[in-house]
Length: 229
Figure 1 (cartoon, rainbow, N blue to C red):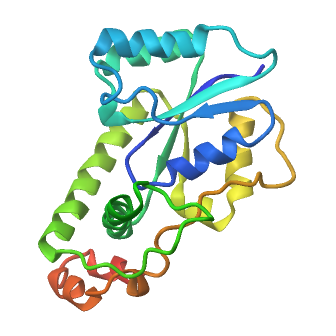
Figure 2 (tube, one colour):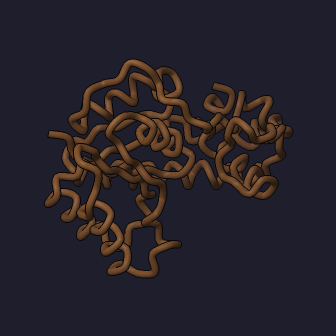
């Protein structure tokens, strides 16, 4: 029997792309960050919205999912109890390289300032190279490391949930999409659904105008090798 699902993630980890792939595949509805704190003023309102989405009327045979950052849940224990009680599958998406994740963050901010969106689509003009403050960059890397450790602890409370790695999603998106479909009890598909989302960060050297400054800031840290990986 197919199961509804919930995607746990941190920013700039490929969650929007995974959501779009799932939503575009048969028998799946997957919404974006409808339940984030910015849209839900307190825990009661948030849980009411989650209940309505998952327990309300739906097309016969379809499954529902959503994606929410782990920091956007008001009451994690109550949230976990709701997912487990209602058989909602927990899925995580992570990124192995916090340095590239940080580059993606600054490029997303620049994209939002220029175009009012956080993810490029096929019709968006290319962003071009941007400059990143080296100290803010180092702080972002540390932040993403801490957030990932928190995500791991959150996922562990659900037992042994499926984890999708951003790097694997980029390498073979159809395979990773089908891993999720099988996990939630659906048949794999043979072709990748079309989405409008495109990568906002090409190679780091071409994406960052002051690459050498960032490399100098990361000298003598384990992060340096990740910068140009």
